[in-house]
Image 1: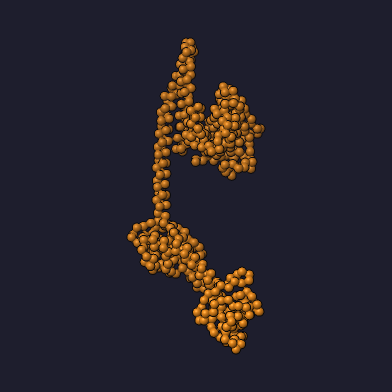
Image 2: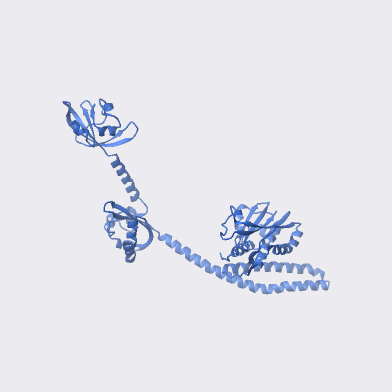
Length: 488
């Protein structure tokens, strides 16, 4: 008898009527984590209820816990009445049951609909609470047993059953997609779907299939609304650009005549000694030119947005362009008592660019520097740099360009706050209306400058400290790396 119980898979403990352990087999030693010699003569410590199995927790000396199913029968041991206690280790079973309960609770209470289909993919064998709510069924049992074609259009179902599902099963992967489902009341809704196989039997390699379904109707409607709004905005923007371009052309013709006649009248006033008229004529001339500049800016931005801006690309030497720009701006700098400087390193490469547009870019940047600087200096620097010289730029440089012409316009002016560094490059935007009133301007100059540079393969960014000054950086591809004109 002892030999039989010693070889039992279950733990066996003999307890006498005094509740003392008299024998423990090898399986019992393993369950208690102690040798039989340590257990014999000790108090058993668990209730001994004959015939009714109970679960007990055994705490081992190493603080690990074993969950056991305990059965007690009366027996005789060494000619005395005793109890034979059988202990079956159900720790893994209980852990599995706990995990299953957790997963079931998670699945059942998930906000997404979860369905499981039989192996033939013809019927639903499980649906969580969200699934019958999503499909409009009052009770879960109404959903279980329904065929898949109850919800899916035939062509979508055919594609899934005969194309996508076999692929998913053979590769055991998650298939993701979207489909149009039908509720019980016949209404349709868009849903995102994740399908994945659940292994049923390793030997036969048979599978169930699970689906996680989420209603994305609101998302789809929002996408349609956004797309419609975008299309409407693009149409409105094109109409605006066309209107501005037309109006700019219409305004430039009479304005050019006003500017021209003001020059002629000024010459006549000098010739015939009507000197009291000269200041007024100069105001007319200056205001006309300022208005013409604004109209030209509006016309430029309209052409850019309409994709009709034209370039004449040539190899352009930078030094003459810088000199031309500084000669144009010098009188304004001199009036304000500013020191206008420039420094170009030797062996500056030429750039393949539209010369007139480079002049426009530099004139705008240098004139802005002079405009927003009351004391100190404005400096223009230019140098050639390898791509590897640049680090921590606010953009990624084109990988096919090795050498760049780096032009810097440095001023000691009012500076720009950190939060406004990108804002100044937006259309019709200035950082402060008080500056707009003081210095005049539409807020288009820097927007046009950035767009022109982008379209000619260049870049612009600014570094600045408020009340201390700014440095505008311009990068242009060197002539040996001709740029690709692009529209953005």
